[in-house]
Length: 318
Ligand code: NAD
Ligand code: AKB
Image (cartoon, rainbow, N blue to C red; front, side):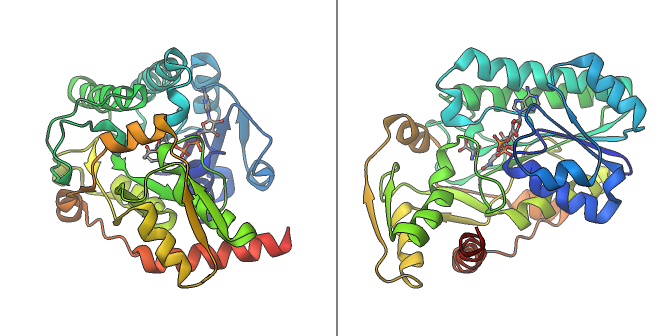
């Protein structure tokens, strides 16, 4: 990786990857693209930034040529809960956006990272220790686009030798940029409500388990996979990764250790609950650990401590 383009760069994940990669490769060598510019102003000021739709082939090609891009990190997407509000739009952005970027990666010989998700699994998938290779029949439009995306990336690698790589991210937990409309967003919202109001109305049932990953471990996973020896990658576009599996009750209990008055109540969102019920409880990520040294640092206890610390500092300075 020398000259990197990030699409969807102002989003929850993109903003954190952009910061980390600019610290390693310099501001000028990490070029950002998004369809909005109303957030993360510092990233926009610090280095090259373009407003562009990832489906706009000509504009993305201009940017790739101008900055001599060799690596694309394609993150522009519609997430699971938002996707259910307008499925054709989710399909258009997630699939036509990815196809446009894959074609450009092929034409300009770029490596490409694009994430899949635990959303690529469905209710017929084994729920516990979900294997790396298993049944994938998701019921959300988001999940359908994620399985198709995994297969498209395999296709471009096998047919055109494009260096595509990806992981199946679990719910990502972070504090810099708000989440973009996913089913796992509750695991971020809960911290803001605990600190502001000592009460959280949770849209997911108390004992629904999902995999989660703290943002610094997610960013490190992207860097490690992109730098991994290609000869060792057996599942290059869809590695299961996780760091913790918890339910709303468990994260609430962990927060109560720091804020004893905190209470959680439940008002179930049927759309989010249906999606959450169809996702695994806990992935088996042993192949990522063996093949490219995936090794997350944060568990539930450390993550809750750090989130409360970071968000309370932000709230008191706001
Ligand atoms: P997000 O919604 O926070 O950010 C997505 C960004 O893409 C936004 O800034 C949005 O403005 C931009 N965007 C949307 N449509 C665009 C378009 N047509 N052209 C250019 N930019 C566009 O999402 P995120 O959480 O940062 O997710 C990034 C990627 O990671 C997605 O592929 C998502 O499926 C995957 N992922 C995220 C999580 C998670 O928990 N956040 C988990 C699994 C996988
Ligand atoms: C979502 O909930 O849609 C995302 C994801 C796990 O893919 N956070």
